[in-house]
Image 1 (cartoon, rainbow, N blue to C red):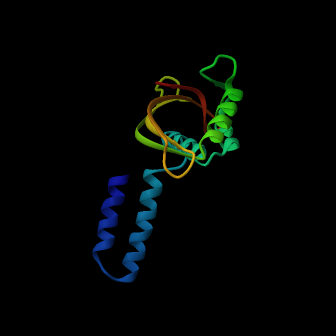
Image 2: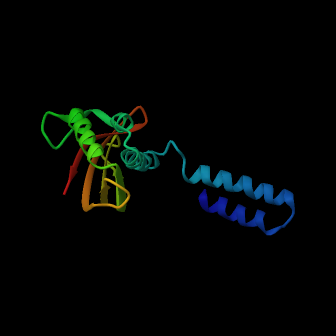
Length: 160
């Protein structure tokens, strides 16, 4: 379908009159809708990864916690969501400016259990008390996701 939409867009765009350009814009809208639907589980998963990054950079603890599953498993056994909240409070108090630079990202939905997914993200994390970063480290983060009610929630987090 995306190939047909691309062909239709190129045909519409060849003629220069206004009506044809309007049709071309409509074709572009349909193309974007058909090729990147919001209800696509893979698109929703990748949006969840970006939402988590954004919430962390904005130091929005509530938003981060809203992305965690009720069964979130932290690196410290038995602490889960409470561990995440405490860790964010410590980090945000220490660093006024936190920046997460994504070096690479791969997310895939499990073929056998389509309500489970894994994201592996390589990031550079910089922290600063002022404007100039005073610390930087690279991590490989592995995130386990679970899909409930068409939303992906973080259920597990590990890093190296």
